[in-house]
Image 1 (cartoon, helix red, strand yellow):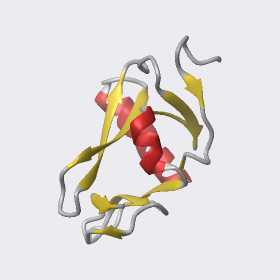
Image 2 (image 1 turned 90 degrees about the vertical axis):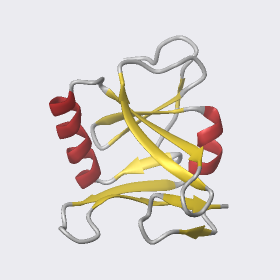
Image 3 (image 1 turned 120 degrees about the vertical axis):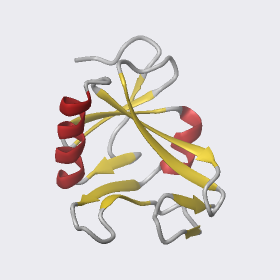
Image 4 (image 1 turned 180 degrees about the horizontal axis):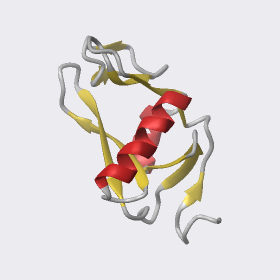
Length: 119
């Protein structure tokens, strides 16, 4: 299926989900019923200046980059893409230090919670 007009098709060089992250996102999409796309955004804030935001959306916006990874469709805005390139999203179900974890090669520093970083 081709992306909607005004949305570019990207690849896993931008963002790659591990099999575990893909399975968890797919389960959350099914449970939450908020939309079939995972939007990853980077915003100002957090302990290190920038933080990751994840949410489900019903459709991509004009200008977005669409990436298919681990059975999930991820959408990223062009500004976020600049900071995200080469990032891997993993998921762990461990009680301690579990949850979604970003491995971002562009981050110069990140906090122990893994939710914010600086460049």
